[in-house]
Amino acid sequence: MTDQLVDTTARPEPLPEPEAGGWTGALRRRIFDTMPPERLLPDTQPSYVASWIYVFGVLSLTALLTVIATGTILALKGAAWWHVSGTGHFVNSLHLWSVELFMTFMSIHLIAKFFMAAWRGRRLMTWITGVVAFGCSAFTALTGYLVQQNFDAQWIAVQAKDGLNAIGVGAYFNTMDFGQMLIWHVALLPLVISVIVAWHILLVRRRGVVPPLPLPGTEAQRETEAQA
Amino acid sequence: MTIALAAPPATVPRPAFAPPVNLSGQGHYLHWGFVQVSVANVVVIAAIAVAFVVALFVPFPGSKGRDGR
Image (cartoon, rainbow over all chains, first blue to last red; front, side):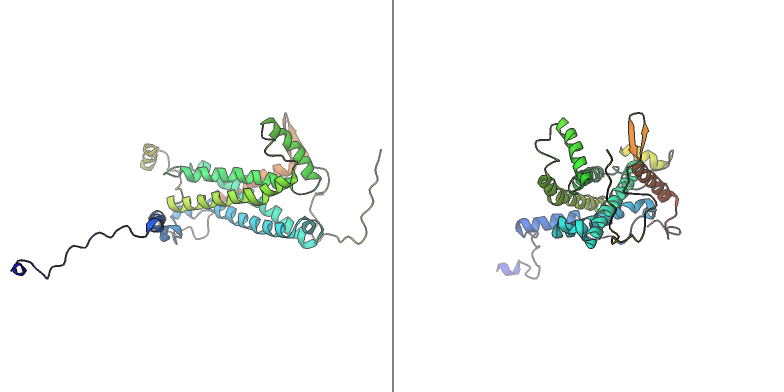
């Protein structure tokens, strides 16, 4: 009897799809919602990026990759190799000069972003990770000079330990302890820099490249001030 | 007391590209009050400043004629 009252041709409304996949599914959805592939690897950029001043970020990254590659070879071959063999001297020089270029490019990148007020538009963490990466890089460079195994390294170690003792960290960071400085230089600090730089790049991709500051007296400038 | 250093052996190969200044000698420093900075660092700082200004004003290849995206 009741069959006549029920429309058997109509399909029931589909139930909402449950949040399947457990924590891995939730993590996957979160990653793809936050960083969709077209934002992670874009093939276009705003027109204002077509300027040499925007090149120094990727130049810094390229120099950093060279630093890590040559440093890995030096660590694998050892001090006896880089001090006495011609190839060792060459790789040692590549490591030094890629560091010089890395710090140079990063300095220009930092100055440019400072004058662009690159923390605008919810980019504060992008700016902070960049500054922290710069500080960690300078600290890593110090430990690099300390493990040269020459008179220069000994001079720097003796000078630096006075300053570090003065601020009370000499008991934990002894510049005259070669083994401690070597581990900081080849293991701890490169890991920290790699993580911070990767985080910095992901933030740049997520928030986009900061636009130039608006001209004074324009509507764009008033909008920028209102957002601040 | 003067210590005479032995001359390097004749078999040491000469570098293919000699630097314009003697990089193995004593460093040169500039003094300004309590500020002391090496000439090498001044050169690097000046190079950074020049690169910064050049990057601002030299046109980027293909930057003209873009439609905003």
